[in-house]
Image (cartoon, rainbow, N blue to C red; front, side):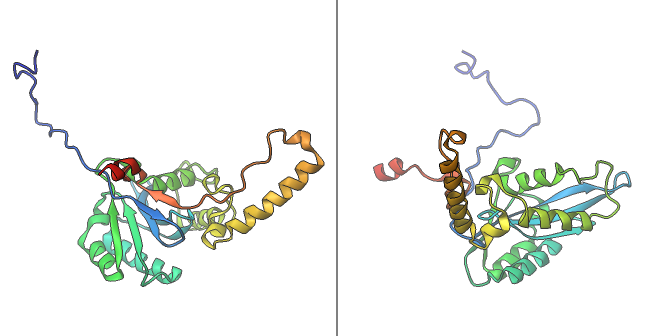
Length: 241
């Protein structure tokens, strides 16, 4: 009744709710095809002072391909780090998508110009939607829930981050990679590792079948990885169109 009598109107100074389309979907079938990056605040022992951790991650392998710690957020520092990451990974002259949220360093002109120079496609999350950048958010959660993360702040962050990156890339058995380390996945060694694991498990099951009444665990590689999968058109809709 209120709507029929035009009594339901926007009140106050707040903005109207704006419907935003979802970011474009991308698929990574190998390393160095899609990267995700973000900056997180890291408290120091001095109240009100923070370090800023810049971290780039390959979403196919979950490997941290580059990181630095600075005392400020800056698009120019991010652009320089991006170029060094590509040089280290030797992925020039090939398609690469870089996904991030809508922070100021991500959208600054310096960063945009550097991505155009490097031939990198920029992908941005929707404003105020953290789910659009899940890989970086998940990585920072793993970092900050480690027992080594100091609850009272850092005197110096670099050494702690160095140790974390080494552990994460080379030792951490990632659950989303079927318990293969990101470094091995990035080197395309996950298929051999999982194949050997399957042989070992099948031999153990044969020796003691009562231990695995429902069969051994899945030992198949996870395959391609999607960025923003919700925005992929439905196949039936495409056929109908």
